[in-house]
Length: 100
Image 1 (cartoon, rainbow, N blue to C red):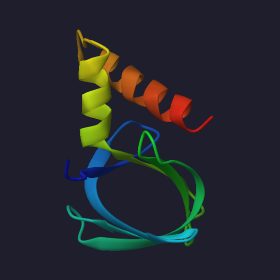
Image 2: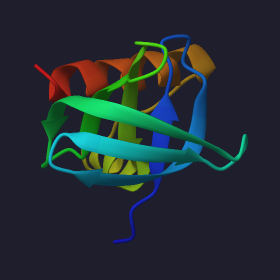
Image 3: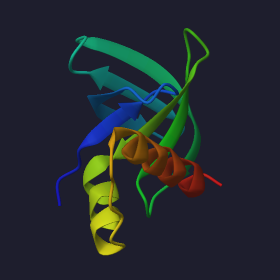
């Protein structure tokens, strides 16, 4: 399955990105803004494909999620969204649970 990384902000906006990590340093390219971010890896979960990184310039914490893996998890566990707020809560729960 191909990877489809998304950058998820605290306000639950997300953008498709390309992620390249070597050890604990990551370079993130945001397609929409055509902008590169250099960040330090804080936590990661290889099974659920979730990363938390800290932006080296602003100091903000950013969450990265492989949406293909997350979507498969939701389908296998029959997670159903009744509205957009429900989707956002499940995405945040998935990220937080993966990084505990």
